Length: 257
Ligand SMILES: Nc1ncnc2c1ncn2[C@@H]1O[C@H](COP(=O)(O)OP(=O)(O)OP(=O)(O)O)[C@@H](O)[C@H]1O
Ligand SMILES: [Mg+2]
Image (cartoon, rainbow, N blue to C red):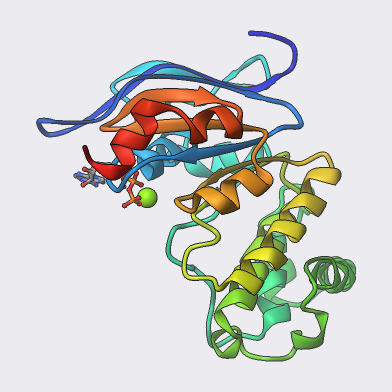
C-alpha cells in the first residue's frame, strides 16, 4: 500500500441475496484529500460505508487502514477506536437533549477517557474532571462549526442545516482521523450548503481525512479533490472533478440513458 494512503479498499464485493450491492470495488483514499463518492440511488455508496465501519461484512476483498490494520472482520466499536467516524444518511441525534449534551455524549465514547460505570453512577471526582474538560472541548467545537449560540437549545428544535452542523461537531469531538459523511448536504438549502462546505474545509485543515457521499455535483465540485463514481455496485469512473463532470459514462449513468 502506498505510504500516502489512509484507506485501501481492494476487490470488495458484497451480495444481498441475489443482488451484487458491491462488485469488486477498488479505492485508495489518499491522506489529506477530500474524496467524494457519487452515484445514482442504490449504487452501493452507503453499503460501502457500512463495510468500512464494520456494520456489514463483505463476502470478499480487503479494507486496510493506515498501512496495517485489516478492518474486515472487526466490530464497529473496534473500527471507531481506530479514529474512524461515520455519520448516517438519516440524522441520528438525540432530539430531546440539548445541543451541548449531544456533544458530551459523543465525546464520552472516546477511548482516551478511562472511567468505569461506578465513576458515572457516583459522579466521582475523576468523572467530574473528564466532564469539565469535555464540556470546554464541546463548546469550542460548537464555535468551530459556527453554532455556539445554540448550545442550550434542544437538538430537535434546531433548523435542519444547524442539525447537520451539530452532527459534524459530534463527529469531530471523537477526534477522528477519518471522517465518513453520508450525504451531509442532503436537504440543505444553498446558504446552508455553503456553510457546510466551509465547515468541512476547516475540518480538512485540521488534518482530518474526509470522505463524503453526495448527489449534488455542484457541491461536490466545490469540495472534492478526487471523485469516485459507483453505479450498480461497480466503480464506474474516478478522477478530478472536472474530468468526472465531462465523463460520458458518468453522464449516462446519471441521466439513465
Ligand atoms: N440491508 C439490505 N438488505 C438488502 N438489500 C439492501 C440492503 N441495504 C441496501 N440494499 C440494496 O443494496 C443496493 C445498494 O444500496 P445502498 O443503500 O448502498 O445505495 P446508495 O448508493 O447508498 O443509495 P442512495 O443514494 O439511495 O442512498 C440497493 O439496491 C439497495 O436496495
Ligand atoms: Mg445511501
